[in-house]
Image 1 (tube, rainbow, N blue to C red):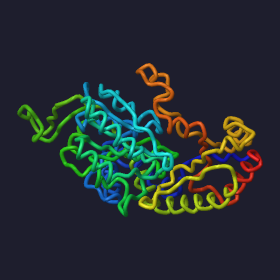
Image 2: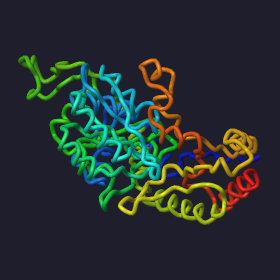
Image 3: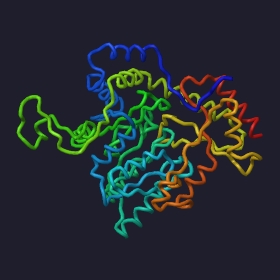
Image 4: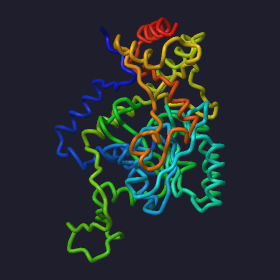
Length: 387
């Protein structure tokens, strides 16, 4: 029985050749392929600087540290995300809280954010960092979030793990027009892949220099940042506590090759999403809504099941689809309901929109190589199961 995943990478001969060339070179890591990849992504997105790392989780971590997040500070993010969007704050010793989601986009709700900021200001509990998550590839309302950031003095880090190749108000996600930093993921199910990998983009030179040090143990080789005289041209100094979050040249070569096809990947995802919109008409589901000010990267295609109109539960539908190798998924279990976060004091009912969305959501297959025939099969099977 053919397996149809919810998402997967597409590797072609050019990708294999790019990796092979690096494998046969002098540089497997800390070499020129990394800088080339960083510059290509920054140029594509319209940002000044990019720092490639070994995962989007690492990217979130060093972005928070570069923003000065630490003990006594507070980070806010969306509950409808993978746990890394919140964990990065805890890694820094900060407190974490959440802002409920918009029922149409499933992104952070602008009205909920504004209301929460008003209340937080009154009790002296404003966040130092806010991480809006561009869920499924659709940008959050970044211009309005920037307005609030300026009013309430917090740093904005875009979690754009789903969204490379997407746009907001005509500019690429990652341009950092309305944020201090943006992060991408290059996991195999994302738009382009390096295997594992991530990246931070910024337009600020000070943040770029800090991110570069944090990626490599907090080490400086530029005498501008050294605190003692150099012993010689070999000299380096660890000036802060950093990490080994480096990406390899092998991964960067794959990423650079993949980037050459990113617009093709996005175009096909939009074709498939538009076909789903037509094929799924008449079924008791809510289709993804697209804000006209955004152009989604369409990392995911998520449905909301009208459970009150169905005779089966979401679990039954999920299991029946998976039983015949249609590998649907659920994105996401609200972070605040995870046992670890419950031990921090969060509980069910804290963010009702995210919780209601979670009860109803189902992610169906969407990836570059999904054929029209396989897509029609997915819909036919889903139709038969839920009717």
